[in-house]
Length: 205
Picture 1: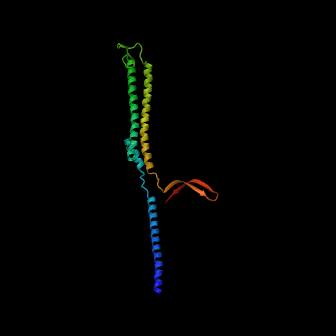
Picture 2: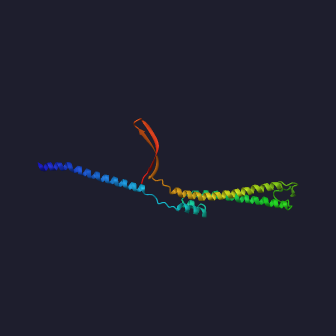
Picture 3: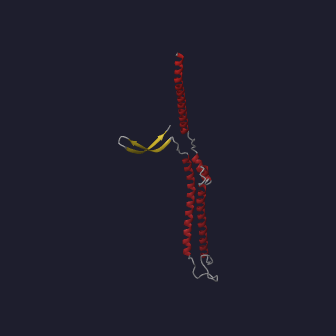
């Protein structure tokens, strides 16, 4: 009788022990999993304080190289397109300035064979120039102004290329993980049946 009683007790107690052990193991696994998640969340990529300076230096040496260093390859055609446009406008205005200047110098020397003077169908020069000397002077002023403006724009694009590489390198190291987060929240107040909308700034050490 006693042996049967012990047998029945053991049948009742054994499942409880097994359940308790399984629960402990599950709890340990859960704690371990949370610990791993926390460690992964806390782990951050190492910050290189010299990266922005390197990107700016590379772009100063060769435009677009800083963007390649930041792995922003799609910006390289934009950099060269903008610089190429500025250089093209500078060269074009410089050539036109030289053209009008040479014509004006020939006028002062007494020649009437420049392309802005004009000619009759028989090849003889017109009685009055198609573009006057004053017109040549105004054109020189305008193209000189355009030439200087194109140079300033090209220098500005070159400087912007350096600044862009530097700022991109800074932003690539900006902390955007879950340890520092700004999230909206919506709370329901059961006391007066109202909702509260706000922002929560969370920081995990």
